[in-house]
Image (tube, rainbow, N blue to C red; front, side, top):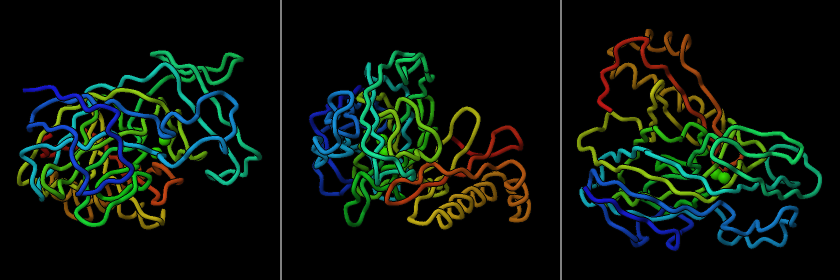
Length: 299
Ligand code: CA
Ligand code: CA
C-alpha cells in the first residue's frame, strides 16, 4: 500500500465534480492531507480587525484526492488515523456572526500544545480534542461551497470527527474526489459563535472503497463507542428528524428490529444532538451506543 501526500497548495472552495484531482490513491492506501485553517491564514495577529482580513478564500479545503477504484454508487470508508495540530489556533467573535449579539469584533490567537489550548493569558486552559470541520466527496450535481454541509459531507462541523473515527461518505462521481480542511483544536456542539479553535494541521487517513454497501446511511461515523447518523438542512426541525430517521433505518436493517422496537430503543438510548447551528445548512446527528444489542454491521 502506498502513502500519498496531499499538499496544502492545492486548496479549493467548493466540492465539485469538475475540480481536477491533485493526487491519486488506490483503495487501501493511506494519505496525509496538509490543511489550511478556515481563514486561510488571514487572521495574522491577536486583536486584528476582521475588516483587514481577505475572506475571498474562506474555508479552503485540501484536495481533491482521486481514489482509482471508486465509482458512483460505492461508499468511501475514511479512517481518521491521526490529526496533528499546528502550535497555534485562532477565533473571531463579532457582531452579526454566530447566534449571540456580540458588540464589535474580537479576533484572537491562542497558543496550543499537544494537550491543551491556553484560552486566556490568566491561566484558563482547555483540553485539545482535535477534529476535522470540513470533509467530503464531490456531489454529482451542482458544486456545493465548502461552507455548506449536505449529503456529500462538507462543512459538517461534528465535534466527534476525531482521530480514531471511521467516516463513510458517498461516492457520487468517479474517483470520489475526497477533500478536507477547517481543522478545529476543540469545538462544542452548536459551534455557536460561528468558529471553533481554527487551526492549520495535518490529517492522516486510510481510504477504502466499499462496493455494494448501499446499506450505509452516509455520511455515517463510527467510533469505539457509538454509531452516528448525520443530516443537514436549513431547518433544525428537518435535519433533526432526518438524522433520527437514518439511525432508525440503520437499526431496523442491521439489528433486525421492528420499527416500533427501533423507535423505543432510540427514545431510550439514542442521543439526538445538534452539531452546528451556524452554517448555511444546520446539522444534527443521532448517536446510538455500541454494546446494547448485537448489530450486524461490518465496519
Ligand atoms: Ca466549519
Ligand atoms: Ca471552522
